[in-house]
Image (cartoon, rainbow, N blue to C red):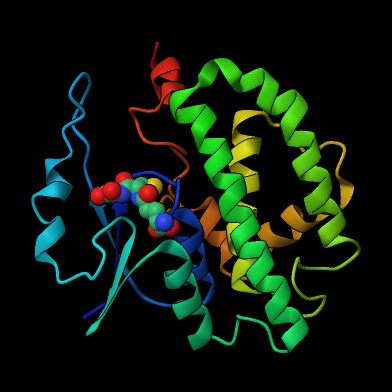
Length: 221
Ligand SMILES: N[C@@H](CCC(=O)N[C@@H](CS)C(=O)NCC(=O)O)C(=O)O
């Protein structure tokens, strides 16, 4: 049986895992759990099975690979990464990878707070808070080819790429002042299999957030 990645039909916290599966040539099945239309946004498609799947900590995304059942997006990322030697080769790389994964999750959570629940803070976030965060990421990347290692792409590059691309989706000019990040984004999009996937009908381009987020509600008006 093919491994199954379960999530909402959005990019939010699963698209970087999809990209990693594509890049590592791992055949898998996307299981989309549907959310009903407004105003109720019925999630029973997920909640009706949530506690019946044998997951230790039932949540989305989940990844089921035969008898290995995982939740927690970073655990899923590392599981696939370990199978493909993409979790850092030296202690220095593993330290950088740990830092970057946690920093990217903090970055994601602050981003979601605004775009799901507090859209009136959008300008403060994009104009004042985001540049500070992007400078930190830009400095961390420096003149390396990838965020963790100059030689090898790691799983952490997939998460930060996707998060940065969510920002580009919202505001295409957002990376204009960060040349090294732009080069990283371009390099990532040119990777074998990723380039074809991004251009293919299989690639989920949106929504970035779930349909009940303030941002997506605003887009539908
Ligand atoms: N820390 C978890 C967060 C998971 C999470 O918050 N999932 C959200 C979507 S991004 C969800 O809708 N979970 C379904 C649920 O709470 O039952 C991870 O990294 O996977």
